[in-house]
Length: 193
Image (cartoon, rainbow, N blue to C red; front, side, top):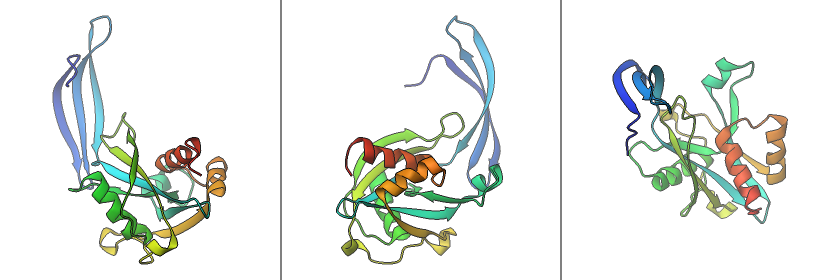
């Protein structure tokens, strides 16, 4: 359902290189009935899916490490981010996407996942909605080294951490990725591990 308090005037494309970036000029009616004219930029990245693989018997989780340019240029760090496995949906549904991404990035072949959340990543600037999943893994599911696809310019390091260590890495600042923090906390809050 569209919001009757919003009237879009113009949408101007600013970039269509990696993804689409538009400037939107619109009128927004505030509570007292007055209309305000506003400009906002919206980045259309496409929706994605992410997953936390966990092993109850070993008390471990699978995470990945990869270079992220925006984190590199935004702050004084090396741009290497520790994250859960994730990927853009492209033309797949969220379940198909994440099962494929797990094998490409981590080397584990999974058949089932449990959807736990559906969240807008940064609704003030991006259209991206992420579908959050969890699944249990074990060593018999390991079919390759993972590491991502060269064709997608991925160079991914697969990491296995003790669950308690991963939680401590949030507090130490080693894990700074929101989707990873959300899924680790989901596992903790719901006493899965």
